[in-house]
Length: 226
Image (cartoon, rainbow, N blue to C red; front, side, top):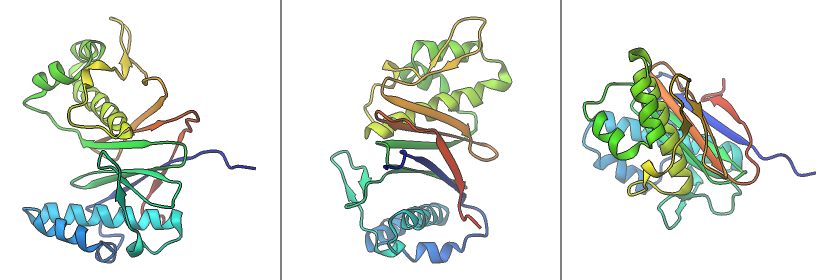
């Protein structure tokens, strides 16, 4: 009997002392190490190395292959794949936090963002948020404004990444919530997709999207597991 499809979301604190990040970074490919070295600051290099070492460590658990031997290919949109593995995965990281979605149900996308005020938020909302999303933000209480802003943003970004799209996608043409004045927003997903969001650690917002006919609920894991 075929096992039901799964959607796993892994997260790690990139600022934590554990796991031993040097060992994780030692599994990077030559191309990854070269890209890491070209980043401008030590902080950016550390974040990149730890996030991609984390990616390899987690995927090695699914494939049974040593982390350092994993070879990635890229599809027409530049999205990485693992040849010979029936896994879809997607990585997102910011300073201090990394998320990885892994699934056999269909294409996945994940996004993480630190909660912070943005000086250009009004322009972003006008350009990238659908009318219902704009209305919900106008009605939000001050304490709820930025959490709602980034909940919308990460859900939209996760969906775009699941599609294999990003820059140039018409974000304002689809909505991830429904809103009626006087009522709390109701979170929705485009047809053929499931979207989930959560607080991805103190001060971070995360979201994951999966596409397909079978849309499993996400199971969450923290790396390292022990």
